[in-house]
Length: 294
Image (cartoon, rainbow, N blue to C red; front, top):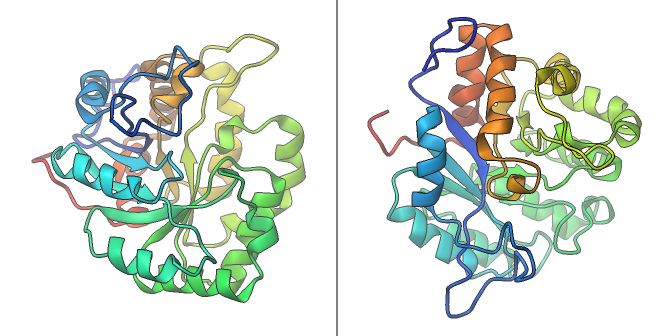
């Protein structure tokens, strides 16, 4: 695959933000809702690969979308059977009495790359981040070499990540969906984002690219480029990774719509920087290991 500027795509492209679920399971799923006609269908590795592989995507990292603890095991079992899935970011609740045993259990799996915590499932990291038991969990996470993914950023969550990395500076953090933030929250969080940009173990995802503006989803790099430029200026070419948010992003547009925005943007940045964003940075952030020849 060659880009518009004639830059050949790298042989490896890793999508660091996809979700797996199957409403057809006997136990069903906590999300998405049956009333959602776009999302309420099986989202499994073969379906993802059929969409993403023709674009050059060679692997993906699942980010957990279920609050049920045993769904960590379900995703691991699905991923084990599909080498296209490089690993998962699971759901364990920091600060709870069972966290230590759960972390010990799941961290034994090479495909378990980290946990997700943020504005999801009624959690409030800003209210928790200075509690001793919460911080103890973060320190254990860093000790076993796993990453922390944020979920659905707003200024309070971004400020909480500053506090978390103040307390645990050796914690690797990956921040999702920053491009989708509205302009006012983005401005309110700008000082804290710049502070996080100085911290070498904090990464940002080019995920949540498409936005709904007054009832329509703009197309093309002209609209999305300025926000991506701001992120690039904060985190630089060494700490940005690509993620699609599939299939949740189908609410805004098809898989290739956001992918092409990122591809065209990276063509402007050059082949070396593009290769970092497409896969090298994600390997540093998540420590995934290749499971296919690419």
